[in-house]
Image: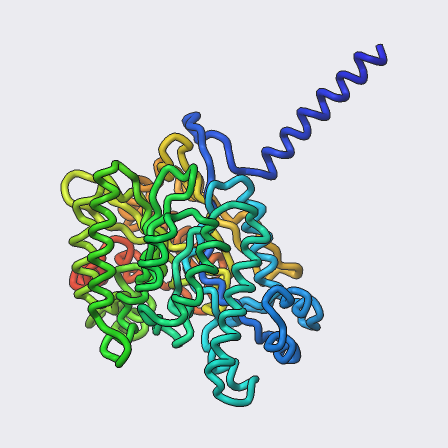
Length: 475
């Protein structure tokens, strides 16, 4: 009897342990139709500020990056800040801890850019007391090293596929210099600390140092990641400033065309990873060109038209090759659709909400559910940190298919949702609620402005975007 009881206790304990491990891991399972699944976590726009407690600044300047955690732990600042703030050390730790809990046994983790806070140089020079460029660049390098080390400490040997944001440079906002010192100084750091050698080293060093773009195919991923530096395509990139040249942007597009052709020839599925998405700049369109009736006189765009036109021409024939896209930059929970040539279905560029709450949104990140067999994206879930809570912490907000009552795969569901948003009040309310990660006070979406947000999903070209808004307004 004792042996039977002991065996029963052992078996029950073992089953309980297995169940707990599955709950904690949350990385393998099955879809609603029994499809074997895996997961990938995506986070974006951390905008980390080391200036939150100015008393620590002299010690940070004097110390190596690996000493920074101990310095931050001495801070008297114990909160994660609030809306309108950048990510301080406390929010960074909370966010990365939450991401890592969801990334257990992920094949890769994806970061879609903007490590550094806005106005990084101004804050440095104000605290430093002089415009010492060498000291500033050393501080930037230590900050991105600290950031990279924080990721590596949490993700074990999982590669972090990344892209550069518009704040990630020595030169300032939207001013990444192709062939510049920032790219040279960070190439080895990001390759070894973030990618974990998940890309062929020689091509990576060549393209990354040339312009901050590269391709990667980490073991076990079943797809090729093409990481673009879309900051170079932005309307804010100083292409005519000395030291910059529009030829660098054209060179990246030529590289993209060659890389896609090679991937298609080898029958490799591709995900496009970028920071600034193509299509409409919805916020600027509403603020600058929309009147009180919702009519717009023009539309603001994220990219210069010449680069977007060429980009769309390049990717159009590759609907069977490019399966998915990921971006950041807007800080919001949204997506864009592009339609390849032929009969290929619409492909999404899914935008991940930011960790930084600077634009009034709650911090958030996404967890993609994929088919284990071919890495087709089936669904995603979003976790957010509700800053209004007495003790803010990251927790599940919603899952896409369940919220909108759609069927996988995700690409088709996102296309269907776009159509539904024109007529379904429930769907549009849900989309609006999640757009700012459940905090809409900073710039609420109204019935008048809503068409600008809905039309921005599926209309990449400026004229089509403007026509869609104005047609919706006159209905």
